[in-house]
Image (cartoon, rainbow, N blue to C red; front, side, top):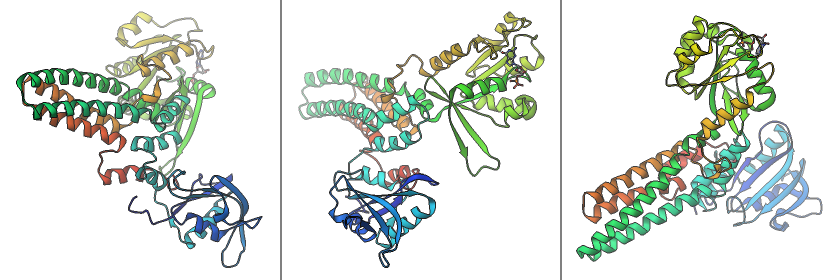
Length: 463
Ligand code: GDP
């Protein structure tokens, strides 16, 4: 039960705009009663008479006048077998702005309250239908950009991450219990034996946490995209590369509303990795990123990108501008692409190599399409760092989880130090318990209410 248990909430669950179908969803004890007031089945059925997981066809009507508002399919899901574990009703109408707004208004006039952002999922969490990591995965599923990011999100939603966390917490509890037993029976030999066992157990937990944390970077990239910038002097083939990637691998395009000029985020799907190509001033329009935006801005981009693709022209000698660009790359995740290898070579490869340090250099020809598969392999290798592709379900993918796991790992390291200093068992227990609590934050087992509130407020209304 939660603080809003008596409220019945309502919201449009489908995306705004026009669509074949639009859904108004109700959740709470009054859902069926409210739906009964505004739904008239063709066979005369009311919402009360519709069995759980059955649909009835009819109309949404204005209760006072019985005027039809829209045609509708009514779907009833009774507690606890629903998304929120409360009574849930879906009114599946036509997907237009006006009919949906009117149907929503009728549910409010009939006793529902407009749902807050993420409130359906928050109720699912508070009623124990999902844990916090699973609830966060709902958003990740909705926003997933490639098949690999979807695999990860669906894995989390199914509980793959939560399961791992619970196993580790269980191991920690066993260690804590062992120590507490030793505290209660403080013969020296038992204590010594216990601390050796607890040390081994802590090391095993440490290993698991490190293994999970090692997936965090890849997980975050799969979720949020790899911020990629293509740079090079005019005419090396930047637009050609961008266009070639977009033509073959375009994943999704999102408009970012509320910006002064329309910024478009374009994602390219490279072996499941969403590459977010930064088209700041529009390299396709200006043909020259460095000239248009200036060296300083290029430097800024190079410093903020997760991946920098530098293009050079194989059919021309290296210029000062090329050298300037190459000099920005030290310590940055960059790859150097020598383009136009279909033309007679003029570029001094040895010189390029000496300027690039340890950066990967690939020879490509965008015109002929050669070297592009190798480029994809290289990018995937860089992101996955040898981790199993298809194993994404267990990857860590958000900052909140990463922080909780890192903190837990620190507490375990403290515990091991405490053991090594032969300090009293109570001190070890404190460290292990802190680690256990930190891990509980991932699943929401140990968590402050206001943080939970904050997490769900990032959802949209209707989710
Ligand atoms: P940008 O100024 O860096 O964006 O370069 P563009 O993509 O506009 O390319 C400049 C010119 O180089 C165009 O005429 C392209 O057709 C040509 N180009 C791009 N890639 C290749 C390539 O691999 N081989 C050859 N021969 N020409 C290319």
